Image (cartoon, rainbow, N blue to C red; front, side, top):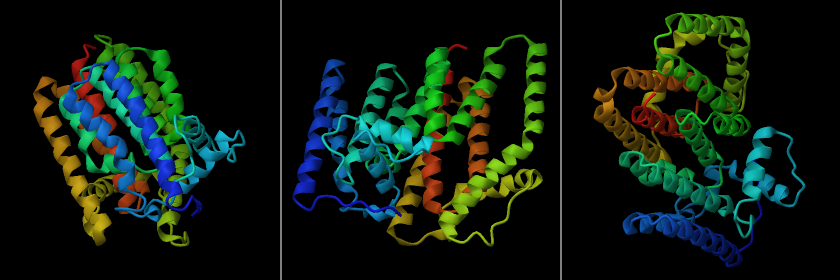
Length: 362
């Protein structure tokens, strides 16, 4: 755990008020410019203040200790002396370093940038006339409110995931590749699966009446899967070992999985991933996780039931993808809180891609 030494009260409050005022002005400018309805405008402007609820008031900063890591590296990048060579840390550090913030001196600093980015995404999707239910999820889902109101990178990952799918469905492939590159740099495995999913979707839904082409493409993809199976298994075990160490601090009991283990363990890990945090329910934090998980499931169920009849094939495709990603991440992650973060990082972009794929004429 890295530590961060911020100003004492009231200086830390003054810095936070400076960041809050700046993002409030920026958000108001864009909401005013694009003539957003008054109710939505008020809700989004009020949401600029949510970082004040966390890191001290409702939840202590050490519940999410990696905040200090992103703050330290963003602060160093703002001074043009980036401390890390790690692409993930460096990319998020640069983005946050040059965000419209007065200062990066408090634990809430990056949180204000996250709120501004999410508000601008909501405005962008509103202007594109995305389903209102999805906008409600982005605005009111408690877990997303929390993660976009603290100093972690999850908000950036969700935003670039949604933008990647958007530009893919709009067939703006150069911009799609740019957003995918950002995803690779921010969270490698997310960039990988969104890129692969986009290719598979293109193959099944964009290529019409070309059975031979689809067959050849599937054969090539199968060949690559078989050829790289050992590398894929090794990568998954590396990530799994990292999460195991984070949770248990000791890797002496860690067991690597073979590809056969991965296949046969997937149904079990899917179930465990879905029911988390029921088996480890203790304290207020896990109660919040449980309630938010139920809300997320309720929203997701409504989205699929409401739209299932519009296109059975696409509905089944995205439902299968969602369950597959849950099973895959269930193989790697052991902590209920981390599982919850991944549920949101996975589910929200998949719901968007499902809704927007129905809207677009392939």
